[in-house]
Image (cartoon, rainbow, N blue to C red; front, side, top):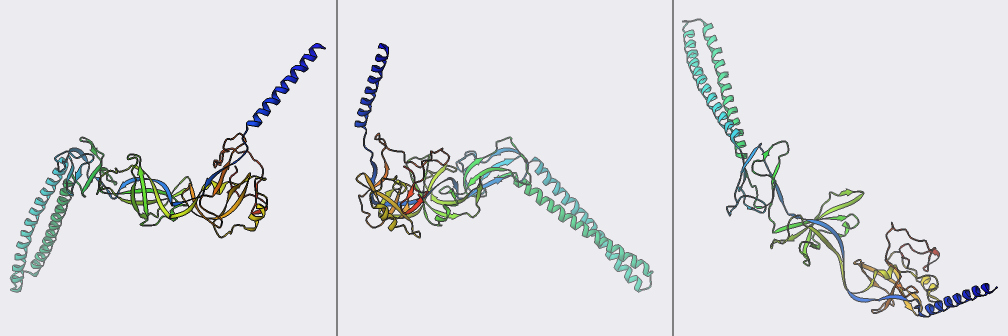
Amino acid sequence: MRRTAVALLIIALAGAAGAGIWAFRSATIKAPGFRTASVRRGDLVAAISATGTVEPEAAVDVGAQVAGVIVAFGTDKDGQSITWGSAVDVGTVLAKIDDSLYVAAVKTAKAQIDQYSGQLIRDQAILDRDRVDLARYQTLVAQNAIARQQAEDQFYVVQQDEGTVKLDEGLVEGAKASLLAAQTNLDYCTIKSPVKGVVIDRRVNIGQTVVSSLNAPSLFLIANDLSRIQVWVSVNEADVGGISRGGPATFTVDAIPGRVFRGQVGQVRLNATMTQNVVTYTVEVDTNNSDGALLPYLTANAQFEVGRRKGVLLVPNAALHWWPHDGQVAPGAEQLVHAHRPDKTEQSATIWVAQGGFVRPLLVKTGLTDGGFTEVEGPGLIEGLDAVVGEYARDGRAAQEAVRSPFTPQIFRGPRRDLSQPNQAASPSASAP
C-alpha cells in the first residue's frame, strides 16, 4: 500500500513538472507572422542566360596532300620555329615533308618528255620524207612512168606516218601532264600557310609520318584574326525566340573573373541540335578582342538582353507565388478577389499585403522579370508597400518557401482553395508556404 502511494506521488510530480515546462515554452514561443518585402522602384533588365565557347571568327585547317615524313618546320617572322601561337603570313612555310620520292617522280616525267619528244622528231622526219616520195610518185604516174598502184601504196604509208606523229604528240602531252602532277606533288611537300593569322594548334612533330587519304590530315589550325572573336552559345529552343540579330549581349569567362565582355548577336544558326530530347540553337556573338584577353575555346557565360525597364515598380518573385492558408485571409477579402478576377488575356497575378494577423489580396499586372524581381503595376500598388513573401513558423523560424525540385518527395497537405475561383483548387503556380 505504501509503495502504491509513493508511485502515485512520483507520477503526480512528473506531471506537474511537464505542465510547468509546457507553460514556460508556450510563454516564450513567438506568435506566427508574415515575412514581407517592400515594393520598390528601380530599373530591371530581363535577360536569357546560356553557356557557350569562345571561338575564332574563322579558323583554317591546314593539311597535307601528299604522304611522307615531316623533316622540318618553317620559321615565323621572328626566326622562331613554327609552333603554337606563331604569327604567320600568307605563304609562310609551316613544315616540310621528305621529298625524295617526289623529286624522282619529277625526273622520271622529264625523261619521258625527252623520250617522246625524240620519237616525235624521228617520226615527223619519216612523214616528211614519205610525203616527198608521194609527190614524186604522183608526178611519175601522170607521165605514165610507173604504175598507179605504187602511188596509192605510198599514199597509205603517208597516212600511217601521220598517225604515228599524232600518237607521239599525245605521248609528249601526257608526259608534260605527268611532269606537272609530279611537280605539284613536289611543291606540296612544302606546306605553306594559306592565310594570315595565328597558329592555334600544331598536331605533328618532326619525324612523324603523314599518310594522305581521301580526307587530308590536319597538321595545323590557324585562326585568321584573333582581334575579332566569337562566342558560340547554345540557347534552348524555348528562349531562342527572344534573341534577334544585332541585339546586345554580355558574357564572362572564368579565366578573367570580374570582367564583363560586351558584344552583339551576329546570327542565329538554323541547324538545331538535339541532345536527350533537348533542342538547342547556336547563337553567334561577335566581340572585339583587340587586347588579346580572350583565348580560343574558353567557356563563356552569356546573357542576352531581351528587355529593359527604367523606374518601374518591382516585387520579389516569391511574392507572386506565395498563397495564404485558410483563415489567413482578412474578412471580406474573399469577395474582393472574386469580384476582381484577373483578366485571362493579360499577365495578371495576386500579391498579398499583411493586415494585422491577416492578409488581403492586391491584383496586379506583371511585366518583365529578371528571375529575382518582376515588374508589376496596378491600382493600389505604391512604392514601399510590404508584400508577403512567406511566413514564420510558430517557433519563430522562417518557413521554407523555396521552390522544390519536382523529383523531391513532398507531403500532400490537402487542396488549397483559389480565392479568385470559388469551390476550385488553387492554381498550380501558387507555391505552398
